[in-house]
Each structure stands twice: as C-alpha cells, then as structure tokens.
Image 1 (tube, each protein chain N blue to C red):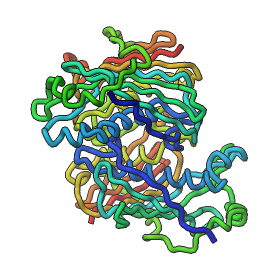
Image 2: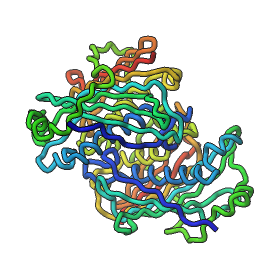
Image 3: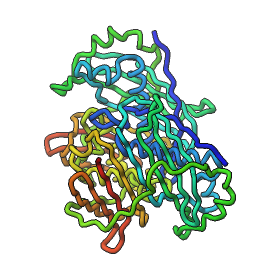
Length: 242
Length: 242
C-alpha cells in the first residue's frame, strides 16, 4: 500500500485574474499537472505509456474550491489513486494552504487509450502491475456527477487551433473550462463562494474542428454542452456556486 | 550593485504541444513569471505598486530560443535589470538547461502605469529608489526590434473574454502570442530551428473588445498586427525562424 504524494505550488501572477485570486483553470492546471508528475514519477506516466502507444486521457473530473487563494499563496496538492476499474482509474486530490487548511479537492477518473485506435484499453493489467501504487484512502468528495442533457440558452463557437491542443493531440481540459467560463457573467466568475465543477469528456476534439459551446444558465448553476457537430457531444459539464 | 537572480522550472506536461517539446507561450510564461516573482521579492512587484495605484506593464519584448526543451526538462531562468530609463526599465533573461547550456534568452522593457489614468509614469524615482537592484551585465541579445507596419494577407477575429484578461485587466501577453501562433502553419510551429519573437505593446486591449489579428506571412518570417479597431493598433510583432 502506498502513501499520498505531495506537490508544492504557489499562486503566480500568471495564475490570477483581476481580483488577484487564482483562477479555477490555473488551479485545475496544477491538479492535472500533479497527476502527470505523480504518474511519471511512479513509472506509469504518459511518457512511459507512449512507448507502448498508449496514453492516459481524462474521462471525468470533479473539482471543488471552498475559496480561491490569492496571488503568491503557497499551497500543497496531495494526490493518491484509490481505485483501478477495468476502464477507469480514480485519482484524488486535496489542496491545502501553508496553514494546513484544505481549500479545495478533486476526484478524477482516467481511461487509458490506444493511440492508434484512440479507444480505451482494459486497465486490469495496470491495476495488477501497479497495485502497490494504490492508497487505502477514500475520495475527498463525491465522484464526478452525471451531467444531464443541456438545453442551451446561449451558444458560442470556437475553432480548435494549435494553442488548444495538448500532448495528446486533443483539446486541453483547461481550454474547455476557459471556453465555458468565458460565457458566464463576471459576477459569477468573481464570486467568493464555494464552487463545484463536474466535467464528462465523451469524445475528443481535434485540430480544425469547430466546436459549439452551449450554456444553460440557471441562477447559480451553469450547465454546458460542447459539440463538435449535431451528433457528437464532446464535453458535458456543470458549474455550481453555493 | 546586485547580482543576477536564478529561478528553477521544469517543462511540465501542460507546457508541451504534441511534439512533446515546450511551447513558446509556456516558456514565455515562465519568463514573465520570473519577472513578477523577482520584482515581488525585491519589493517593487505589482502587488507593492498596486498599493500606490501603479502597476508594471510590458511595453516591448524580444525572446529567442535556440531549441525548445522536451517534457520534464529542468531549466533555470536567470534574470537581471540593467537599465532604468525615464519611461522604460530593461529586464533581461537567460534560460539554461541542467547541463548549463543556454538555450534561450529574452530582453523585456517595462513601463509603470498609473492605474487611474492608465498612462505611463516617470520611472526616475524607481531608478533612484532601487538603484541597488541594477546588475552591471549587458543584455543577452538585441533589444526588441521595431516592427514595421504590416500588410496582412490573413486575418482572424477574437473577442476578448474573461480568460484573456490578467491581473492588469488587459489581455495577457501569452494570449496575444497564442492568437498569433494559431494563424501559422503547423510546419513552422513545430520546426526545430532557432526562433526569435519581437513584440511591441502599443495599446491595452480590454474585456469585450473584438480584436482583429492580421498576419503577413513571408517565408520563414511572420509579421503580426493586432487591432482593436481601424485606428488603434494594440500589438505589432514578428516571429522569425532561422
């Protein structure tokens, strides 16, 4: 049985918006970055998998922030894997400030894809090969919640460009979050209230595709559906402020 | 007289494109981040200036990369100020890998603005107050070059949204670079050749403005002009691959 791993970060000027508090995408980037670094350090990172023409892709993500730390705040991201299913592995995170106060948490579920077929592969062997990487600790919050079909009251278009694409050659998760947040009113985005974000990644978006971002705003909750075309939903997500 | 300061970074998964080498915006972010952290540590960071309703804004930038480091490469950014003019201060950077080989360098020129009037203030007092922060070392390459008027052969539009805005409430430098690069062919973007980027920031771009990005591609050089409207040029830039 393994222990949780800890990674230290600081809220840099590039991570804050005009309220001088960290943006949710910047904290999300630190969370996913921690996942990559931890997998890398333990020998099952994207770089190692690529050798076998495999890669991790994020399938579902739930992120909660009680508050958004201010510029130059030091914080620690703890991460641990507590489950390998046949298709999804579950990696958890908590974010704590220098005083040890937890201000955020996340539960992410990852699939391993074959880079040739772009389809998910059976994870059982990973669970066996890396059983010693599993930490016997529960997830810090509910797993990513299903986001029901969305009735957009607002839509925007985004043509996928070079800067949207990550090492997996598909649209970067933080870019999706930015596309969604860019449709929300400033009042919500700069609220000092606890927020929870749930995202489901249903289909990859690739270079050159034109995405339609649909938003259904209902009070202090926003539902999103990002489509590559009429048939294909790429992402469903919800953001809720307490 | 002060000495150069050194800051350590690593090329994280979020910093690379599908070639698994660091993107120019990710290295540019590390450079500007180093500027912010170093000014902060020396007591004349944006946070200290904001108390007096002032802020640093980047006026001109020249960045050169001999090569783009691969994922998980550790590198060090050295930074030093070697000049305070009446309007601009010059901050320099070199990027070196773990073997001590320099692979990139930058010269940036900063103005201090009054946050009420958004106009530049006289820097003489900063030069006096922080003369001990000046390092007696030349800039590592030519200062930012003037970019002549551009005849766009290609244009794209970008409406400035929440995720484009930084702590200064104007469009983030890396975003400008991404807007420009997203107009270039993959072949150039993924070239393994030395590249130099020159940028002039002539006018701030603010939330809600619709920017027109004009690109004049001439062989291995691209010239850019970003306009808020027919009269107002916000940014002029050039990117040249050797």
